[in-house]
Image (tube, rainbow, N blue to C red; front, side):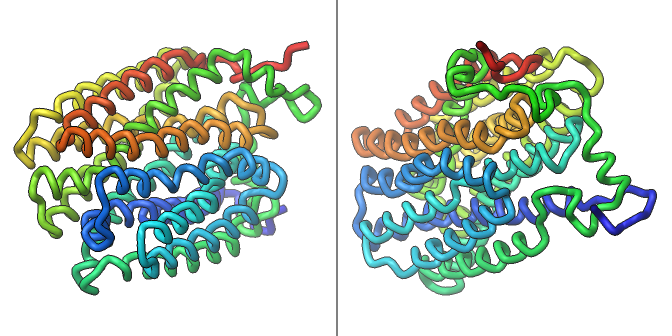
Amino acid sequence: MSTTTSTRPTRVRWQIFGILWVLVLLNFIDRATLSIAMPMISDEFELTPQAQGVILGSFFWTYLLFQIPGGWLLDRFGPRAVVGAAGVVWGGFQLLGGLTGGAASLTLTRLGLGASEAPVFPAGAKLNAGWLPRRERARGATFIDAAGPFGSAVGGLLVTALIAATGGWRWAFVITGAVTLVVAALYWTYLRDDPGTHPGVNDAELAHIRQESPGADDDGPAAPLPRVLDYARSRSFWGMMLGRLGWATIWWGIISWTPSYLSDALGFDLAALGWGTFLVYGMGVVGQLVAGYVSDRWRAATPRHNVVMRTLFGISGVGTALAVFSIPPVTDGFVALALLSVAVFFINFGGLYWAIPALLAPKQQVGTVSGVMNISSSVGGGVAPVVMGFAIGATGGFGGSFVFLGVCAVVYLVGSLVIDFERPLARRLA
């Protein structure tokens, strides 16, 4: 129990989320480094668009394979040990990316990066369930997820600045990998899996964290937990998986190919590329924060959670689809940036997905359910760069690849509207 006795609640929970936010930020900077540097890497290694797509997607092959093991490890050993160790490993693989000599060795470092980053987002959902009361969980989920687009945005500026300062792309990998190692050690030092064991949490904050309104995770430890078959019978579960698949395909398609699109199709130089990606991905941060704030405030004012969440996801899906379908005929760089920014703003309402396990699954299964949900993200992330790369190689332009992303926006919309946000994700059936 905490040794802090002030009657005013401490705010350690947000400090915990702040450190995790920085780690997720680095997670996305590490991922985005390859996308930003790809125009230079492709010239040095003489890569076709198809080969570029395969390398960009390779991260997600191992990211997918390690989702369920990563979620199980989180439920078994807790986020502190699992993510602390994972951060050290992925920082090492990122650093090694700067020492590669060709497509094969670069792909191997991306496979290692994908495996070691797999537990990070499920850890956020696990900490969401353990460190926040229900009425703060949408904000907690979107706060952590907002580090993704912000990391991609900052990554655009940082990586282009490092390339300009060092005269090549390799030091960008080495430096970002080394910073990740330091932050992973800080994460392990400060985090505790249980708020009650953190020396900085006082009784008032602990009471605030543990206040609960009736919900899916209030059945208590004696209640029978849903089994695999129970989830397989759940319409909401499959809606979550389908919606997340559509979301991830769009997001990772944009993340993977926007730098090359701006450089190759629209003629952006290195400086313009950095600021252009910063603008586009930065709008994702705004979308995340708007969705989290509106969701928590609106849900607190009404018990009709389906109205709240389906309205937000409906706006997100329709707005994304309209923006992406409008991109193919565009030839003006400013118009392209505006449409990409609108698409990224609306698609990042999907950060609310990380609140779903914490809100609708039992606490004992939040890590595992989050890992299973992130399988859909991994599939989308693995498919999008490859399909877009082959479409670009076959047609010589980016139009077909954006039509593909527009179709995926419709998939995201349909899946999101199927979820029932007023009932548990699954119930144990006899």
